[in-house]
Length: 165
Length: 432
Ligand SMILES: Cc1cc2nc3c(=O)[nH]c(=O)nc-3n(C[C@H](O)[C@H](O)[C@H](O)COP(=O)(O)O)c2cc1C
Ligand code: SF4
Ligand code: FES
Image (cartoon, rainbow over all chains, first blue to last red; front, side):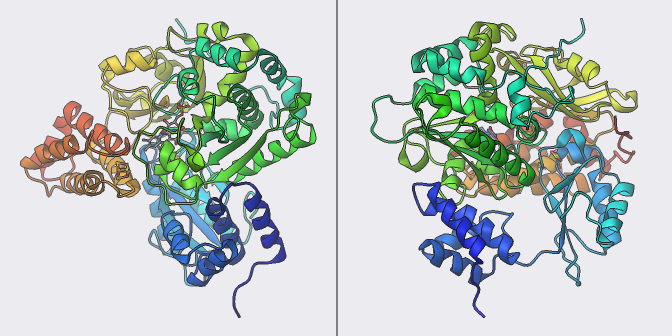
């Protein structure tokens, strides 16, 4: 079945359009709505966004592919992102990544076969004084070590999302 | 003399929840709005000039002067765009305002809007700040209910809407013209300047772009007067700022100090000194794009001019501290891969050069490099700097140039040793 926006998403997009003087400016906020709805931005999702905003599909694709937070393939239920930039690195983020990789059996960039976990290394998350920092979905987990990331992943695997999904 | 700290801006230790409008107002919040409205546009701008607030986003341009560039007699709408894209590695101050004191920023937006006759504000927040955007949206909604935003701001008949706009993961969108492109729905590729945003900004209209902390400082300057605010800092660089210290210190964190506080004292007193009491090796004073400094260079006041005279940049006041034992090649590799990853690809020197630099640094670290590679590295950096559309090219070159100038022995040792001679453990930390 072809994708369609839920009534709630459609209302959100209508409200977004009111905030800007151009339809194009509504694109990034609308892509966020679409990603929330469908989990990632498949080609058909981008076409749906293009139709909804009455924009050429090429414009939608060109913007969507520029930004790293728009997923061009499905990501796991838990998107585990370890900051690898300088401040976190100085406090041992590589050990955090290594432990997470070992525990999950994933290399950074990979998603587990059961769709539960995606492991990724990311750039500075702007919480440098509390690093190493790991972002899981919306939530920041600060002051991470190899031990704390292991405990965190155990809790996630048990379906107990610290801080709420 | 101990470093004087303040809690005008940084109020995280007093146990109150300033996200709550009632709490914010009880502490004097939104009082400056009516005062500013009574003053009128010219007087507000004059007051901000007197306060000598220099941009807190990195470049340090005087806020009042920038506001003065916005044309007065235009029939186009004008916009205020707040840069809340905070992405400069080592920088985590705007995160504080957004997550814990959002009304401070909104109050600053309202006063700025009065000053420049602006009726629409966009706050461009980095996409990772999902909770912070929700916090801001809630604060905005609370203001609408309380009559602080909307068609009639606090009975002044002035109409103002503030919208948050989420980025989507791209460091380059912190650059002001890339940010505008992104706000307009396009890939974040910086524009050639001129025209400057004050004349041709968002949607082709006059636009002021300021950092979160710049705007958050405005209510203080209005409430207590520009001269008072200026007096907290030094001449031509007024006020207090939130300094962030990260890396190899015992108490990393945020500290509010007057502009001109001594950087060495900030590191050793406020941030507790170096982990394991190791000797200090290097300091990056204002976010990763600023040239690295050696321990004998850091006994300086943190002002834009003084740090520039010392050969670096005050940038965002995000101090990154490295202890003895840090491999400067590996540290630089982190930064260089970051810039290579974040280059938007428009300019050949930046697109190609940042990748080359990262690969050569990897080769040095792995012991695959040859003697001439150190000079090649500096040559590439020299060719990028100043030859690009935006300052990311410089941001990528300055670390390379300064690391090689000041820590060449580390790089040479890798070549002589055929690999990395620094295999000791990183300093151990405990959560303060
Ligand atoms: C590559 C690059 C990234 C930048 N990132 C940010 C940022 O995350 N936040 C910010 O406020 N300014 C950033 N800036 C500086 C902005 O271009 C601009 O100078 C600033 O937002 C102006 O506000 P201010 O005058 O209040 O500092 C960046 C500049 C460059 C070249
Ligand atoms: S300097 Fe780099 S980031 Fe800036 S416009 Fe050129 S290619 Fe893009
Ligand atoms: S370097 Fe990791 S949050 Fe900034």
